[in-house]
Each structure stands twice: as C-alpha cells, then as structure tokens.
Length: 272
Image 1: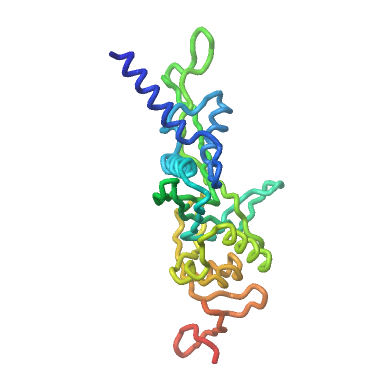
Image 2: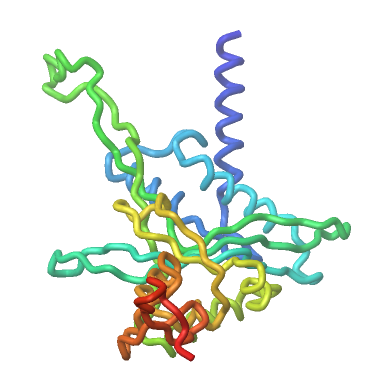
C-alpha cells in the first residue's frame, strides 16, 4: 500500500510540473520566476521537485496562462487587457558597484479569448518583475555538521525568501519614456489609456528597501501625467499633491497649474 501511495504521489507531482512545462504558442508568458528558481537550484546541484518549490502565486499565474494558451482559438482573436500600471523607484548597483535609483515599471491584467467551442477563456498576467530565491544551507544536526567518514556537510539547501528583480525600466527623457509606454499599450490589444486614466489605474509606488511591493501606492493620474512626469515629479505629486518641475523648479499642482505658498492661509494655492 505504501508503494502505491508513493507512486500516486509521484504521478501527482509530475502532473503538477507538466502544467507549467512547454513553450506557449499564442501568447507571451512571464516565466522569469520559474526560470530563476530552476537556475538557482541548479547552481547547488538541485532541481525543483514539486509545485511547492516555487512561489505559489507565480506558479499558478504560469499554470493558468499555459492552460489558456493550450485552449484558446487564435482565429477568434486574443485580447490582452492591462488593468493597472505602476511606476516605482528601485535601486540597482552599476558596474562600479554604486547604487543608482531608476524608474521601474510593472503592470498586470488579463488575457481574453475563446476556445473552439466558443466558450469564453481568461487568464491573468503580470509583467515587469520576477522573484529570485535566496538559498541557504541548513545543517541536519548543527552539533555534528560534518560526516565523520567523508567530511562533507550534512544538511540541505532551503529557500529563505526571495528578492524582487525588475526588468522594465523607463527612460529619463520624456519623449522616449512616452514612446516606451505607448508601445506597451499598442501591444496590449483591448487596452485603453482613457479607461486606465478614468478608473485610477495609473499609479506611483513609494520605494521599498528590497525593491519589493511594500511601499504605499496610489494616484489618480491621467495618461499624459503618467507619461510626462519624471519619477521624482510623480512621487512628489502622489505624496504631496504638488511637485517641483525638474526643468524649471516651478511648483505645480497635479493638473500642471502653477502654485505658490500663501503666507496668510499657510497653503499652496494656484497662481491666478
């Protein structure tokens, strides 16, 4: 009986891993987290053995996207609808080992389509960042860490958290930045900048120490503001409701109107 249970467990695990295997035929899928985990495991001479060896959210995003790709009928059209976009300052280290703050972008939404029987299909997606595991060696018995015969360490590697790795970075040049953003929208058939603006789906997130998603975020930016404001201006605008224009130093409100400090009221007011 134990053998049958063991075989059943093995088959279940194989089925789980097959759900994220293979190359997609019809859509682009962000599999960077899956790839990063495989690569980091391989450096330690290991391989992921089950679904539980991956972050669950990322595993299921890929699983659902692969299922959508396998079932969708491309002749009936496939729509990629972006539901929200976020800009966030992240810190990277340049070739000289010095930290640099750059403008990172990530977004999420849904794929929509139909199968050959005309049933509606959908699958979520996320682009802009992935997770890279931190592997740490854990001794089986800390008081006797080494094998007395071979001298090898006795224990296993375990994942102790992960780091966020971003891969979409926006230009500091306003025209180039707008071009980058417009190209993302053009490739996302079914996405409307008007809808993103009117439904408050264009946001700024405050920086996090690990470049993660712990910083507060929000904003009711329209498309022009989201494209044209620098990451510093966008942050000031989100956190203060006004910003200092980088090119001129002039204070402006969220709508781009000039403002100044009124000593009598103690508030920033529009210049009339």
